[in-house]
Image (cartoon, rainbow, N blue to C red; front, side):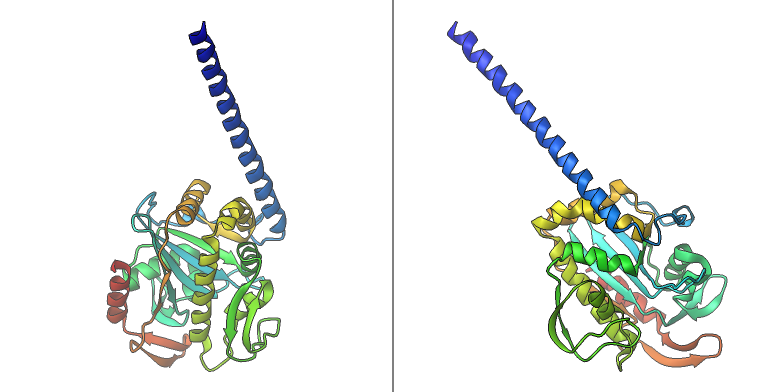
Amino acid sequence: MERMLRRKKRVRWKRLMLLIFILMIGSVGAYATYQYKQGVSLGKEGKFNNDEKVAKAFQGEDVKFGRINVLLLGDDSRGEEHSRTDSIMIAHYDQDTHQSKLISIMRDSYVNIPGHGKQKINAAYAYGGPELLRQTIKENFDIDVNYYAVVDFEGFSKIADIIAPDGIEVDVPHEMQYGIGTTINPGKQTLHGDKLLGYVRFRHDKLSDFGRVQRQQEVISKLKDQALSIGSILKLPKIFGVITPYVDTNLDTPTLFSLGKDLLTNQSNDLKTMRIPVDGSFTNEQFKNAGAVLSINLEQNKSALNEFLSS
């Protein structure tokens, strides 16, 4: 009799634990759905909300696990049908070592664009979108890009505010105003939203695009650190909700969640960065068909890029 009572207690305990588990899963699902819908509502004005995606045209090799390269493009079009991309980056992530790296390619780099001859590299996006830019990077730098993401700059400021609600601390070297729609005063300060966007877009000083690339890498590195907090794990569905209307990408939702979970739940190393062209590998030149360009030593940059990704 006593044995039967103990057995019944064990059965009731298992049922209770199963019920608690089901309720927990349901609560997490409901919370994630709520957060995702909140994110979508924040991005209802997003440029890619109703636009057709171009993912089918992109021919990068699909990689489910291992070393992944994602072409990150900043879209700064003002209604033009064929605009040049404002920034070109390659985000590299190794799922075995959990090492993340970021490569910025200067948009004025003078390279060969398949079918179009020598041009600034950002012209490839205007001629043939992310796929032609992928081909251009492969031909000139021998790097395979697996996926792409075109980010509308309006979405950048909203995503940054969700990841870092307390802002990002920066040291502004001088007043920034021209061409960014706001004024940023010099000195150490915490920037949010539009001012943070202006900080990474400004290029009207003596450093021009070189300074802008430095600031972009600085802010992305700090956002990554913010994203690796417990709070950001809880915000992940909301972040994806905001991303959807502001980002055109061929990364499917399961892959995005897998990468996001991997980055947030594993001990990630510091973000390593580099710039193409590397120091001492380019000259400033002028051509009739392209204007002012960076004439680069391709072999020197291919070697530096290969060493950076291999280390």
